[in-house]
Amino acid sequence: MAKTVNNLGWSILMVACWATMGCRRGIVEVPVSVLEVPVSGPVDALPSGQVIDGRFVDNSHQFSVAMLPGWFSAPMRDDVPIRFSAIHDATESRFEVWFFGERLSKPAPRSDCDWEFADHGDYRSVPITDLYLVATCTPHQSHRPRVFAGLVEGVGGTWQLELHIPVRELAEGLTQGRNLLETVRF
Image (cartoon, rainbow, N blue to C red; front, side, top):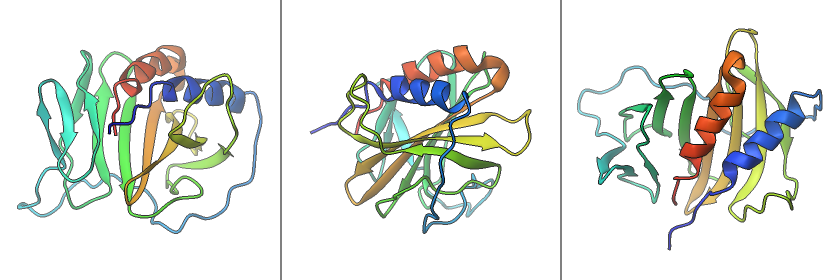
């Protein structure tokens, strides 16, 4: 049965607003390597998925997302944790989907930012049954995008969904990201 993340975008928007108001919380270490998008690899590596009827469908896991106008995706390799990446042309926002074969208690570390906010809170105003953590990663360099993430438990592991939004496009980037997030299915 397919799960939906219909309200993940609203939760990320709420966390974005709350986290940018100065709220900070401590973070514990996550037992996975620092997230880096692989730039090269074996020539014979299979793609992580394919587009079928206007949706990217993962070849190894139960995940799909609609290919909305204005978003352009790059094929990922099937042998790495990043399963899907897309860039919104007008806002230069990026959406990344990672899968880890274990349940994470915190977001996987990134080398370009620090997870300064993470919350397991019960967002009653935004009911999300699949989402168990939301987080915001503040970039080390102020001109770099802010990263908003949500963790969702999947079969055999954890999905980490990330929106990378340039500060100058925060409002529109979050709107476009929410539109894409609403099409995610597990």
